[in-house]
Amino acid sequence: MRILILVTPHFNMAATAGLVDPFRAANYLDGTAHFAWEFASVIGGACLASNGMSIQTLPLAQVQGALRDMVILSSSWTPEAHCGAPLRSALWHWAQSGVTLGAIDTGAFVLAQAGLLQGRRATVHYEHMDAFGERFPGCDLSEELYVFDGNRISCAGGGASVDFALQIIRGAKGDALANAAARYLFHPVVRPPGALQNAAVQEPLGSTAPTAVKRAIALMERNLETPLPIALICERLGISHRQLNRLFAGFVRKTPALYYRDIRLDRARGLVTQTDLAMSEIAVASGFASQVHFSRAYRIRFGLPPSRDRIEGRVPFEFRAWPMHRKPRQG
Image 1 (cartoon, rainbow, N blue to C red):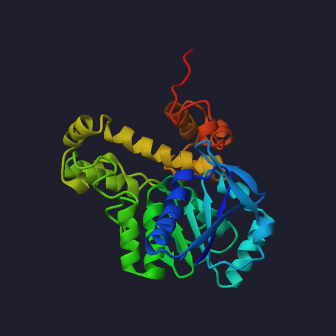
Image 2 (cartoon, rainbow, N blue to C red):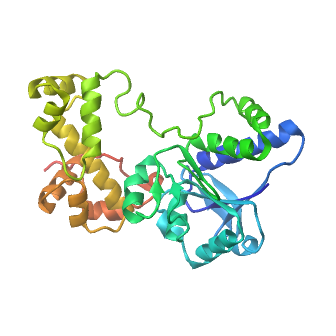
Image 3 (spheres, rainbow, N blue to C red):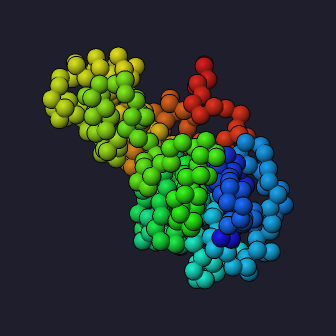
């Protein structure tokens, strides 16, 4: 199986290495080069990853004419900045030749921007899901760790890239080799198709919070654009407002209203920094009736107005001089 891995600037090194290593292990354990891979980028040469490391890549012009069995895009921050005409043309050439096109982390943005995910299922890293859903409504976005939809495959990145590669090995060479590669890499539990990125036991409060708090949060997360009154949430849960306040104070350290506002603002931040939607549209999509109220709340939470965050927030995270949540300046 000939695999081409296309990386964009500031790609995630760990996710990309996690994708490749199971193929290396499978070849080693079976004593046969079942899988071969190359790295490429649009311009070639050294490509810097988000952790400051870099890999050497072939230029796209050198590899685009050669057929591959699989081409996988590894992208992270600002994927839309890297889908120029040469890359779109190469992707369409491979697609028309029957090549399986894949993506890890935010690579699905590039495929979707090229028009290659219309009517297909795909996944991206959970941080970018709202932005992807707004920009590409014709794609069936999944919250699963990885998705196989015929000759379009995708993975949320991170440690799931190992599971993703092991499933590719399983499909190509069977269970025995995939299981042996997993064992060799000390990857004891291969998460199966359908596994979610954020399982209920992990998000957002794990197993410590009572059921009422988890159910309240689930209701909030399903109603971000049109927020439910806290009184209505209490009614649906069958508890009093005072009781819900007490539970949130003990387990969330915030009032229900403040927690609800904050998760709506977190959604808004993804739309601010990852899309070109107007601020008025983002305010409405995040449940704020007034753009003035939205901007004020945004500045309180993140320490800068959304218009400025749109510029600074698109700088790859490792090059920023401030944390994700910074304290507003005094005075």
